[in-house]
Length: 361
Image (cartoon, rainbow, N blue to C red):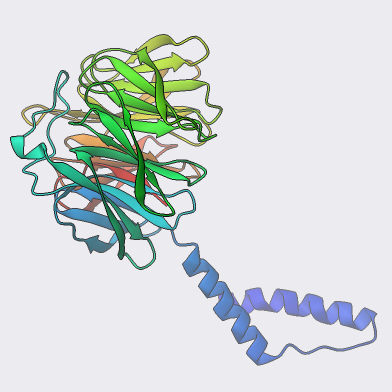
C-alpha cells in the first residue's frame, strides 16, 4: 500500500500540469512497471558489503542486514583485505599453509618458521566473488592498500622488510621498495603521493614516495608501531604503538609526535571520513586478550570513549557516513557493530575463524 501511495504523488502532479496546458496524459502501465524494476535494480547496485580476513578465508557481510552473505575460501590464511576505490575489486593478503597469524606483542610477532615463505596478493571481483588474479609477493605479506587513484595496490612483506607495488591494470609487481624492519599496517595519502608504513620491529614509520617508488625517510613514532592512518587533508598521521599501549599522533609538517594512552595491545586504527575521531582496536594477547575499542578525538587529542567489544579486537573500519564502526574480534570469531553516536555495540556477527583485517565497500 505504501508503494501505491508514493506512486500516486507524481501521478497527481502530472495531471495537474497537463490540465494547465489543456492536454491529458495517462502513464503507461508498462512504463510504471519498468520504472519500479529500475528502482529495485538501482537499490541492488547500491548494496554495501564489508569483508573480514579470516584464518580460513574471507567473510562477506551485508552492511544493511549484518548477515554473512558469502564465505570465500582461500588456499591459506588471509590476514588483510581492502576494497578498491571504485568499489569493484577486493584485495587480500594470504600466507599459504600458515599455522597462525601471530601476535602483535611489541618487539616481535610470534611467528612459526613456515611463515618465512613467499605469500600472495589476491584480487576478487566484488560482485561475483570470483578470484581475478593471484600475485606472488614477498615473505609473510601483511596488509594491502590501493592508492586512491587506483593505479597501484601495495603489499607490505613483513619478513622481507619491503613493500610490493602491484600495477592494478596488469596485476604485475612493478617495484619492490625497501622499508624498515617488520613492515605491517599502512595507509596511503588521499593524493596518492605517499604511503606511511608502520615498521613493527623498530620504532619507525617508513614514508614511501609513490611517484618515484622509493623510501624517502623514516619518522620515529614509538615502540612497535602496528598500523597507521592519515587524515583526508594529509596533514596528520596516526600510528598504533603496540609496545606502549598508545596512539601516536604526528604533525607531518614538523614530524612532532604526541601520544594518547589507549588500552592493552593496540592493533589497527581507523580514521573516520570527517577526520573527527580515530578508532583503535585493542587486541592484547592470547593469554590476556583485550576487548575494547578506544575512540580518540583528533582535535583535542583526548580519549572520547572506551567501548567494550569482543575478545582480541584487531581490525577496525567505519562506514562512509560514520554512523557505524565495525571491529573484528580475533578470539571470539565475531564482528562487533558499534553505533558511533551511542558508543555501544548494537550487533554481533559470527564470521570465519580468527578474523583479522576488515574493510567496507
